[in-house]
Every structure is written in structure tokens, then in C-alpha cells.
Length: 308
Image (cartoon, rainbow, N blue to C red):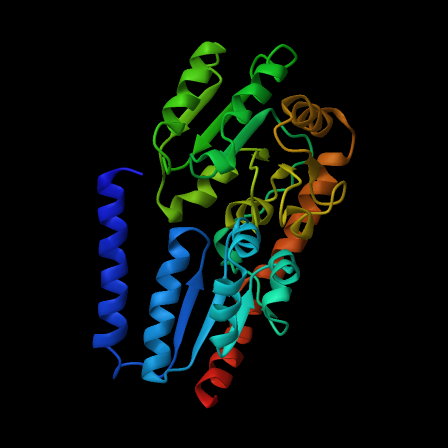
């Protein structure tokens, strides 16, 4: 980690501590997001202050790496979760994996504003692929160019749009270098990031969404692709099999296997009826995550939290 990144994280922690303490008269209850790694310390510090202030608070668990982190630091994780008034998880995967540290975790899924994502059923998809994640090793962006390299012989016109910020030094550049090495500059376009309100438009331009990650929970980008009706090909890691059902609303493959992912994309492009089935089923499942469905669950939670 660079010195500037360390300084930025320290400043963020100080801001969180300052706000929690100085604004203590402005709130009745708090909501704290819990991630693994250095961010876990942020949650610990903030929750210590909330306990001292006798403010009720809810935790929400995030990240596909959190169960591994919990195995490494079970006492810290147990203490944090047990001290909270309410603990929620956005996926059945995290709920199951984190149950040893607290048994009464509530499931409240990540929400999306469904009306913002126009649905187009993919009946006869074109080889237009979308990748939408951060450029970080855990999301394995280098797998995507390898998939395109495997498919280019059969589909010379194939395109892949890769969108996301560079979250780890050199990963974005390493991906660019691989694209050049494979001679895919005409097939793959990289955009370092786009505003959130442009995501539906960009997704609408593609027909197949590939998720190459090695670690995952319930990625909002995949949910957004589902809402738009893209045909999804994803690795079967972490919480993905809890979100997507192979052969029904997505095709799932083992991680870091470009041949398997290429074959799955090829199936969508050639197998009669498969694309339409995946597209329609993905949209139906995405409807479960609409804010209209999820918001009442949060309202009930905070009403209970304030009464605690």
C-alpha cells in the first residue's frame, strides 16, 4: 500500500470518529458497514464509540473475503457482532458463513432501483460483452481478455467493454498489457469508470455480462446486469451460487478457467432458446431486489432499533 493510500485511510477513519462523536446529539441510532481487512478496524473503532455513547446500532456484513477474515480473527469478529443490537447480511451466503459468530443475523438483500434499468430480452444475442468491476486482483480482470482471445477465431467481430476504477496498483496496466500482448486492441475497450447513472445505458449496449471474480458475495453490478436482461456468465465463487442458478438465470464456471468461460459464452451465442431463458429468468430474479421490496425491511429494522 502506498503512503498516500495509508494517509487517505487514516483521514477517513479520523473523519468517521469525529463525526460519530461530534454529531452524537443529531442521531438516535447508527448503521455501520463491516468489511474485512483494514476496514474492519474502522467498524471496531466506531462501534466502540457508539457503545460508550449508549447509541443502538446495526451492522451490515459485506464482502466475499469476510468469512476468511473471520476464521483468522474469530474473537474480534465475534466481539464486534455480539455487541451490536442488530446484524444484517445482504446474501444467504454471508448469513450462513457468519452464523457461527452470531446466530440471529437478518437477511436484507442489496437493493437496486429497478425502474432505472430498462429490460431488453436477449433472444438472439450478438457477441457484445460487458465487464463491470474494479480492477483488483480479487476480481481477476485478466481472465476477460483470455476469454476474448479464445472466442475471436469463431467471432472476429466480438467486442468487450471493461469498465471500472483501478483499485490496486498496476492491475489496470497489467490488463492493458495483456490485451496488447494478445493483439486484442480492436476487440476490447477499457473505461476507467463511469457515473452510476450511466450504468444502465452502458449495460444496455451489451448482450452478455461476464463476471471473472475469484472472490465475491452479492455484487450489485451483476444484479444490475440481471435487471437489464443481459445473459450472465460468472465464476461460481463465494456467494455467486446463492445469487445465480446455473442453467436457469446464468451459466456458472469454475474460477480462472478461460476455456470454460469461453465455452459458456459460445453456448449463449449458439444454443437455441438459451439466451432468452437466461435473460428473462435473470430479470425476474432481479425484481426481488427492487427498492420497493427492500425498503420496508429497512424501515422495520430501524423502527425496532430505535425501540431497543
